Amino acid sequence: MNFQTNLYNMNIKVFDLLCILLLVSFLHKLYFEKELYNKVNKLVLQKFWLISFIIILAWCYYVFVLKNKFEIYKKENQDSAVSATKHALFGFIITICGYLDMTIWVFWLTWVMSFYLEGWV
Image 1: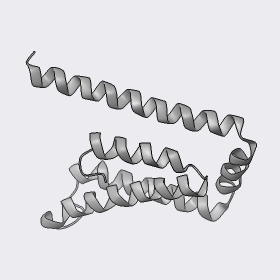
Image 2 (image 1 turned 90 degrees about the vertical axis):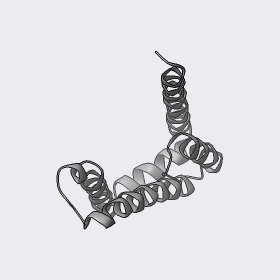
Image 3 (image 1 turned 90 degrees about the horizontal axis):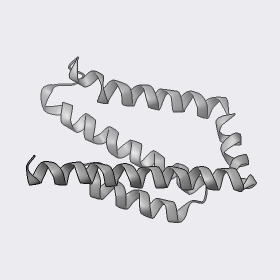
């Protein structure tokens, strides 16, 4: 293996570790703070929000996965559609964090995404 491959593999492992830490911190906060749990529960039980969330997931699947199988847009707009969906998804995650009063978590999420996932932020 060459140096670049080792560095790439190390970056992937660090990214995985940071994502796991962020997820564990979120689940820890969700489990121990009843108010946060109630907010998430209230949000998920709203039919309009849940249907909208499912549509968002379907749209992301359509753009990220099916774009390789089908031409969704004109060839010159394909990359713009992917980029716009990435930014919208990141904005949605930030909005959910704001709704749940997770201000510190937003900083670390933004840092990890901008450092490791080029083009997401």
